[in-house]
Image 1 (cartoon, rainbow, N blue to C red):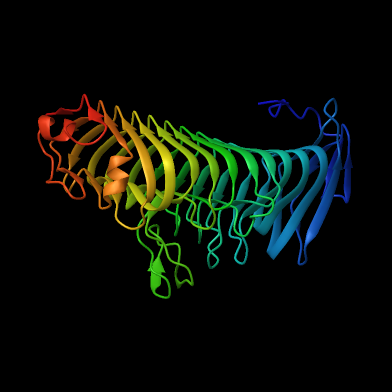
Image 2 (spheres, rainbow, N blue to C red; image 1 turned 90 degrees about the vertical axis):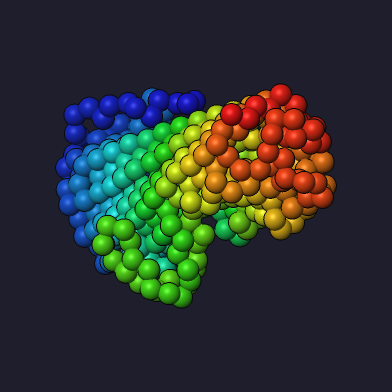
Length: 378
């Protein structure tokens, strides 16, 4: 982290509603405020003297609150039925809550050096509306230790239609994403993103144009978009470049990770368990994808390529356990022949299938496959 986002606010210098501008060193003890139109505030803080907003609830009617400027810290504020939107630098949100936005994404982050930490983003249940959205041109955004759940679209998405200027240098760490209608984490256009030590759980299929209900009974509705229940999606619109997925736990979802298309994708040291479908589903394109040191257990399949041929993988030193169907299946010979299979452990799992060859179930058969060695079958 290149700057101090944990600085304490200190004693309040003023009390009241949100002003148009908050100056360096000011500490606003925010009182509750309702708005019926979009609202905005500009911060004129500095690194030495940030501006602070502490506490309070801002309530809208599906509106937008836009924060611009520099060096501003919100601590403990609630945003009720109003989108939090940023377009500035060094803007920090700690212990906030964003909920019940009926029409838009809960949080829409733009600008640079933005931190969202230890907050709850939930029950923003508009049609295809996401908990957290990172927009075009955003740079250096940290999403840390948040609880994101029961949103109408993805828990986190970046960035639909952003081919010309995608967000970059994004870090998602130690968050929990669960019970959203679509995916936990969905990357469209994005560059250089790390997904580390998150927990993603409780995602199910959600067909478009059919009534669907949230698992806590909070609402039911008919939505225009659908989801296959994947926890993490890479490239559902565009080809993300530089994606690292490391040390996460994914459980009770349909698929753990699905790659539609991606460049330089690394998936290491994750724990995928109790997966209805596939730990790693391969759809369109992902050359030299690294899948290393992961555990895939109690799943239908481990790795499955069954559509397009534009993949090659390094599948090394993983544990596959209690995988009921083919543990690895490449339906295209070229994908199998351009991928490695080294040092993996297969326990109580199905066959490894490489198109054009008999299913491999024993150690000898698996290690005789192209670029395979050191695999163990228990």
